[in-house]
Image (tube, rainbow, N blue to C red):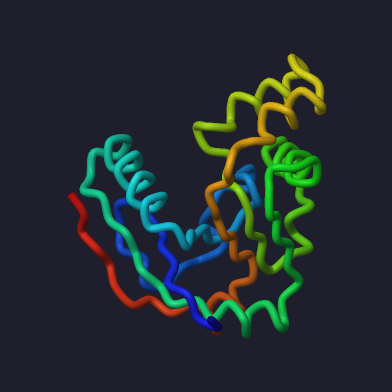
Length: 164
């Protein structure tokens, strides 16, 4: 399938996403984050709703992934492995290795894995131990779009869902 439905969760309508609004020290750097997993977006929207004390929303988009990847400099992580771990650590530590990409996709350092990542960053566990901890976890999926022009060309807002 060339085009896929993707979601951006939060507490505001985002018809015109902006790659530069995000924080730089996130999993895949400063970009616009979406997922193709509705339940993940739903849970994140509720988390942000509690934090911000505003109603949860899910913005829905159509991503022309095939066209995007045909011209993008991209990186896709299929699993929680050494490459993913080192990339996440570098980004969360303020590194800018993400700047060479237009599109990054892979597992999110969510509640299931963040303790392991943080223990590794702080030197409490080795890389081998961290990878053993992560080995059997099935990654959720996040997509970070880092190139504004490509985002505008290949991501189209379709709806905003008010959820309960």
